[in-house]
Image 1: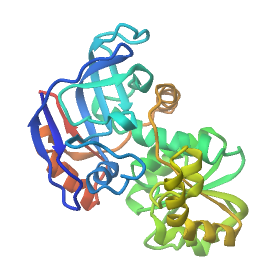
Image 2 (image 1 turned 135 degrees about the vertical axis):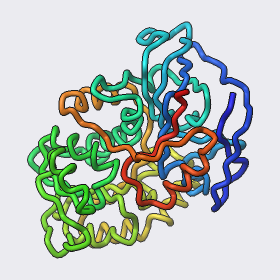
Image 3 (image 1 turned 30 degrees about the horizontal axis):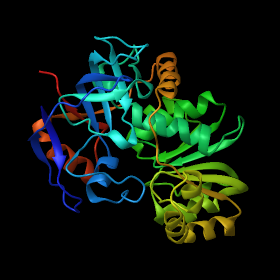
Image 4 (image 1 turned 60 degrees about the horizontal axis):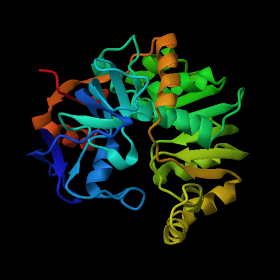
Length: 335
């Protein structure tokens, strides 16, 4: 079968389309033939090695973290899925590889795609949906009636995080580009700031929770607008000692992440808030919950108009790395 792979970590995007063996099937797994795979910033991070200390992969590595496909074979212990089912997944951290013609996935990492979405639309859900779900429920442990701010929340993450946050009783404030205002407001946001015209740090205060999508350069500004005792969760700012300890990483990684995250932890202490970092994992049961919310609220994720074939995986990755897309970038396997 064909697969898009890298041979080593590199600052340059160098992808090869190789012929590799079809994956073996374990008793608790299903084999799917992908219909679509999504291209994410996480794929760029897997290429450049920036998450190597959290998840180190053997080379050559088949890329791709997010997939929709049809089940073509089931393992002997699989109980809840059958051949022909259309499912989706954020692939388990230790077994990525969506950019290939066949993928084997554990049953507990998949769920049926939402009934209101096409396969092309559904592939935009698993990674961002699980990130939002785990951020709100597990990391921030949000409480109804409080306020959350998502700077840079007008993209693919925001379009899932906003309705999830609203379903949990939060007041939701988002900053982003003006073109996305109506879409994000229709998803339930209570307030929307055009980042080109309004500085959120001059407008907002007493925020309970922040989900940072912008990175280290913005984190101090984000902390300044928060209540004492608030929680800020970064998707991109980097891990700290708390992350290493809670994920039971080795002692040397705990020491390393303690050093790496010390600046952010000091800032958090200065402003009286708690800093957290997330690296999202797969979960079929959480996808089940997310799927129901998407169906109930008729959420339709935005997909970039440019669709790529597997042979064009490098072009798709370069587009995501450059930024400025109008929705999730996808690779199509449909003939």
